[in-house]
Length: 460
Picture (tube, rainbow, N blue to C red):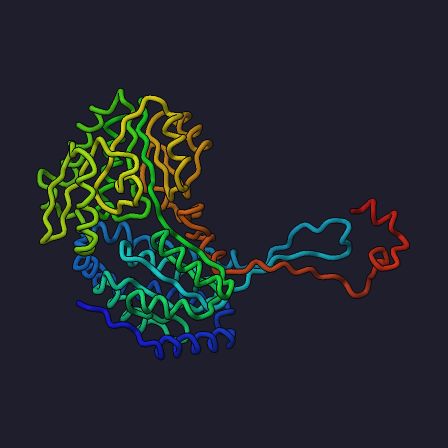
């Protein structure tokens, strides 16, 4: 199945329509936003099976994994906004200092306006529709750009959105990077981009032409540290889960391992056993093991096998784009396996004895989107304080993304801005300060020629 590029004239038509629609002020009404959130929820339920089937066609993603990692997350986000967005949108009265008497100060939240949301292929439902929830609840319009690498999913989403919303409010634009370039040549009030750091730089460069604000959800090499005080069995189980979820094609997947020398052999053995417990004797036959998205991704990830010595796994099947979960040792620190985001089920493993050396290694590289530590919780908190990452887990992987009540986002090379829950609402909003001053009462202190300066000075 091939996705047809949306034409340049069609893109311009949609942009013009959405600008006009936003100026009509329909999206400013909270009742309208609530109605649209409910409409999206109803559409998700109606199209759930088709979305799940499409995820299986494009990625070999089982219904269970599709529901857990994509559909249920969108459901949760919509319900969270329905329950809370009116409170988030309400006017806030804040403290006003005595020097401003008799004025009062408020913060109001206003929608930024016309938004562009560009999503990747690895979680094509969640990463496109979750930001849309924030755009709707904040009162914005949205152009959605799904990935052409998952054409079945992108086609289903286009049909769902067209059936659910008028295009002057929410519309889907399809196509390759040429279409991305066309989209990015226009002015928006916010661009929300999820993808690689290299593509994020291109988006940021395009946005700089208009000084357009950005939310960049990127990636990077997320370290996973297994210390001597860990519970080896639980550590292995949770790391296997995090690394084999979506076949490692997850922006917050653990990317490389540092394992304490004293538990290394036990960890490797436990990793093999937990892999078997989750996916069976032959992982290729597992109902819950995703395939690489395309031949190009398969060839790139498979090439990493040459960067070290395989200690677990190593098998592959190009016909089905299957790569077995693989541990690799003796990997040079300057090899592609340690300098490029893997985005696949290969796991370089290094042993360590001094945690300070691990911390130094992490801090000398770009800030990752996630960091994982297994061991004593107190030592984990010390490591958290001495490093930086978008998010982190102590004695777990992945799960910090599951709580819709906390922000999710990167830092430095792994992104800027955050979303989920209230942070999604704020990402598509401008927090506007408004000062109100009574017109019947006017203190002369602030006015020229500053006759009362000695009193002003005491107040300031």
